[in-house]
Amino acid sequence: MIRLTLFVAIDMKTRLFITDIRKISFDRVGELSPERAERVQRCRRADDKLRCIAGGLFMNKFLGGAKITVNEFGKPECDNGLCFNISHSGSYVLFALSESEVGCDIEEIRFLKGIRLGKIVFCDNEMKLLGNAFDRLGTVWCGASSALLNDLLRTEWGFEGFVVSDYSSNFTGTGYMNPVLAVYNGNDTILTGIWALNKPSHVAAIKLAYRRDPIGFGKALREACKNLCIAKMQTRAFLHPEKVYDDSLAASLQKPSDWNFEFPYAFSALRYVLNNMMNVLLWLLRYVL
Image 1 (cartoon, rainbow, N blue to C red):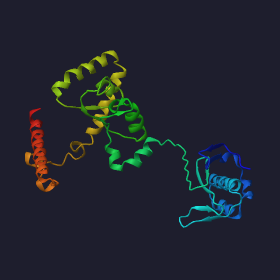
Image 2 (cartoon, rainbow, N blue to C red):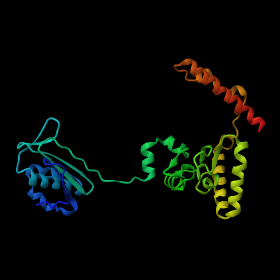
Image 3 (tube, rainbow, N blue to C red):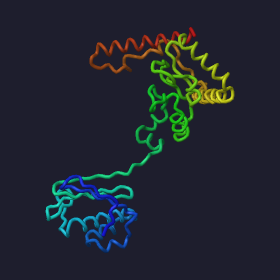
Image 4 (cartoon, rainbow, N blue to C red):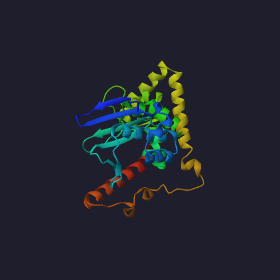
């Protein structure tokens, strides 16, 4: 007999049974039909063999010696009218039995390391460009999440460079876009909207934090400066100082041939004009600031 870990009655016609393969020995293969035993032997891994044995024992116990055939879709069927389905994951095998069509699925909960999950979601270039988000991770602002910026980004992913936040503006309460929390937790720079408006509060907060914790906050500030220097060393001024770049206004403007004009064309053309107006403004600011 097969030792059941759990039995659940869904209704009068459908029942679920689950067992742990760690409670099943390999010598139980002798209780299976020749076809099932052959299928067990085709399994390469030991745990796969045990799952296959467990499924066969379930069939022996609950199908009453019915003849099993495979339909055109590859699904096993009984000649006595009973319907069943088997699913397995990890150490468990699930068996569903019913008088009508039935399906079941079991999945072991597995926790992926951040580096593996990142490589599943992002391409290599995106992995290199990851910064921190305008949103929160749970209840913590992403720009002040040590778990995201230090544990995941720098430790697991091996990121070397500086982290920059999105537009700095706190409309949602304590801790959001806080420059002190940002520095403490691995954020190196914060984008500002209108610097003249943000500067007084940001500078005052940084100075106050340093007075209160000159060792801890000072270390965090030095780490942020180091990351900025690493990023600066990757710019064209250091990598290719021999190259001469065209920094003229004409070179700063985007050519019509490089712009993706799409329907509605009037709106697309307006965006093109506004984009180049911004390029002109940025070019002028380099000489004003």
